Structures are given as C-alpha cells and as structure tokens.
Amino acid sequence: MAMLTLLDRIPMTTLLVIALTLGLAPFVPEPHVWEKLKMLANGTLHRPVDMFDLVFHGLPWLLLIIKLARTALVRK
Image 1 (cartoon, rainbow, N blue to C red):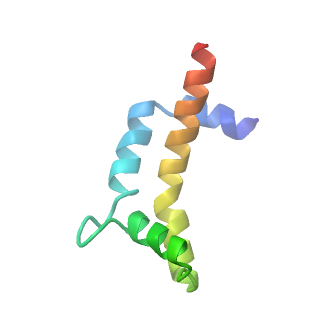
Image 2 (cartoon, one colour):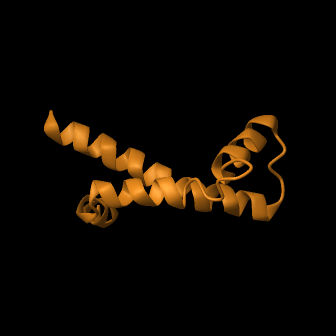
C-alpha cells in the first residue's frame, strides 16, 4: 500500500512527461519500448539487455496506466 500512496502523490502531468520522454526514447528509428514489445511478441526477446530495456522504457507507461486506473476508480 505504501507504493500506491507514493504513486498517488506523483502528479499526473509528471508521469505523462516521463512516459512520453523516457518511455519513448530514443525516438529514431523507433521507440525502444515499441521495439522491445515487438521482440516480445515475436519471441526474440532473449538478451538480458533487451529485457532490461523493456522494463526501463515500459515502467513509466505502466505507472501511468496504474495512476489513470486508480484515478478513475476513485472518481466512481
């Protein structure tokens, strides 16, 4: 519960900026998170550095999704 309390304290705009910058970096030729998700879907995500990249670039998106879900549930 302490982690969710900490997440509640982070402003939505901050999470959005982090997701759009760190979550999509590098932007060219394609965002790392998208590349790693395609590798995961194709079954080619084997190297530890690729797994780390998926977690590193995917975590901001996951936190943003959790924050949006918690916000929606609290409003109901």
